[in-house]
Image (cartoon, rainbow, N blue to C red; front, side, top):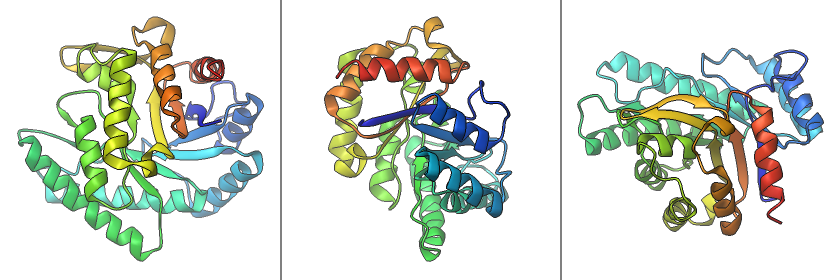
Length: 276
């Protein structure tokens, strides 16, 4: 199956909140992936990571992880930029032990900087992170995410450009965020196809064969994202999104961030499989 569907965090129906329990529940549900949420900080040591990674390998569940929210590579304070680099490096180190393919993260806030300035700064900081990881033979892919508010760095074009500039970087395309940051635009089969086509033209097979999507319902306003919703309560045309992904034949992970997690993940997976 070209796309593996999974949840952003341990499924709600798991018997407990442990990562191992989450992996087992993903397999019981016949889903294919689990994104471990380190958004409040990486609270997993190396020994635990080895155990979780072994369970995921045994169960045939593909893992990814989401780095801490407290990453801002465009902070006005040098100490916060340094701390952001260290958080990303630490996440990547645990990810390697886990056997994780990708680390998703929100790169920066724009503040009052011009977009090009933010791009240059984030590029320089990610190059430093990548140099540290390369010295440790850590090939985990860093995934700057398309973000849900115009105040955040993370347009589709910006994430593609980072992937072109920095080795070991590929986008995490959050279609719900793109829908929200455009105040309800980017919500049709043709528009979804343009997103996929633009990314494929820029990055080629290294992205087409290894995509990472976030999908959920979403509430938004003039300033972009407000909160995630279940698919049924959102205007996101997710069926057309799945049709676009299927028509492009992309491979990788599609992670559901809806509040009901596995319910919507299963809906997405079933609809995708029905496309043949």
